[in-house]
Length: 170
Image (cartoon, rainbow, N blue to C red):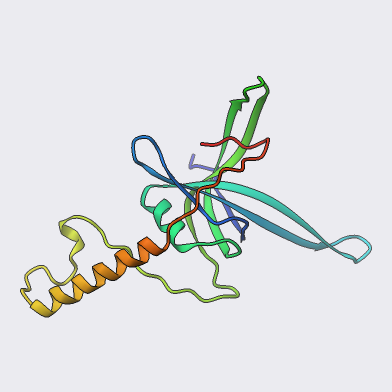
């Protein structure tokens, strides 16, 4: 049987994505978002409910999310539900259900976006310029690399330190 633990949610980021690195240097980003449900009750009155969810992205996607998404942005999240359990310093047992995010991106229902493909490492990363010795191409690549480095430096993420009583730092 195929994996039935799959969720797709659409909501608004309630915080800027929080980029951190594990002790071994693996990038991870925590995101929190709100999903609104609007419906009419039996009396015909409009009701609204909001549910809050958290999730984690890993590796290259984590760095892309931290650089690209910000608080308030409407996002589409695809992932798997994952339950985590821990014990507080006082001995209380806690658990939380989070999303192991497989895909995340901005919703274009009420907005537009520009997508910039991230450069890849490795020999297969060079698309059309494998055998060209064109100086202009090299200069353009150098200028693009410098511009990319400037953009990365300007988009430094902010670490979060204010955890609630039902949240555990990772």
